[in-house]
Structures are given as structure tokens and as C-alpha cells.
Image (cartoon, rainbow, N blue to C red; front, side, top):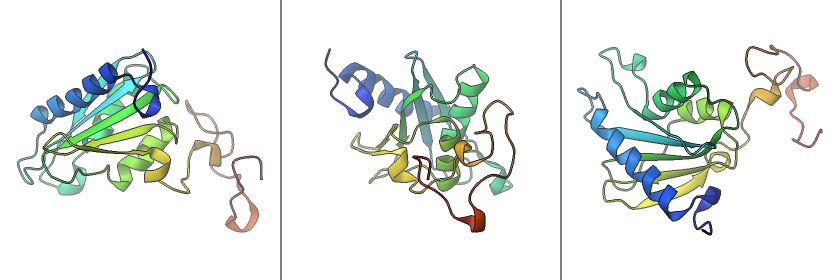
Length: 169
């Protein structure tokens, strides 16, 4: 079947991913904001891993749906480069995008060309790549050793804080 959605998703994968994010909202724990968010990642093995936002009385301690799903996926053995797409669903219109902290968290494990489908409460969606949501991002390859599974460390980079291009500059 020919791909019809960004990221090479078939119509069936797209529908299943979107519905999984919508369904995940039912598990949101949001007694303070009542702002339900569901997230679903599609992996390269066609597994869908979901998460929902979890609030806390100490607001900064809460965790967004995207980070819940991604942490769950990493704990299940899915690592950098294993993610094909993300769907995020809320009850509002227009749809909400992942917050900055989630974008940076995703940057650790997802490619910049991964599509992020953002669904509103009516089922309409907007799609952007992670790179569009997080331009000029900082990732594992910006650290000495390239990061990954406990490798590398701080340091590296260009003198004076300049950053080279991704082609070796």
C-alpha cells in the first residue's frame, strides 16, 4: 500500500496512531487543570506506545503525555532512531503542540524529520516535523562522544560557543 501521510505512514497506521492518542486521553490524571492530553508513538517495529499527562499538586512535578509515552517506550527497549511518528491529542481547538521540555526530550530519541500529528478535540490535525517544532536544536551529537546509552560526556563543541553545521562544519 502506498504511503499517504508524512513519515511514510499508511492510512491505516495514521488512523490507528491518531485513535491511540485520543484513547490515551482517558487515562490522563489532571485534577487541577482538567486539560487532558494523550500521546502515541509509532515505532519502527510498528508498535504503538501511549501515554497521558499526569499532574501533581506541586505543578512542576507533573509529567506530560509525550514524556510518559517516550519514557515507557525507552524502558520497553526502543531507543534512538526507533520512532517513526508521534500523535498528540487534546480536547481543545486548535490543537496543542508538545511543550518545549517535551520537544527537547523527544530530540534525544527521535529524528528531526519525525512527523508530529497534533489532533484537536474535533479530530482535525496539524502536522509538523520535530525539526520544525524545535529549530536549531541541541542533541546528543552536540556532546563529545555523541551520547547514547551512557556514552560521551560534556564538552566538545566549537570554541567560543559557535555551533557548526551538521555536515562536519
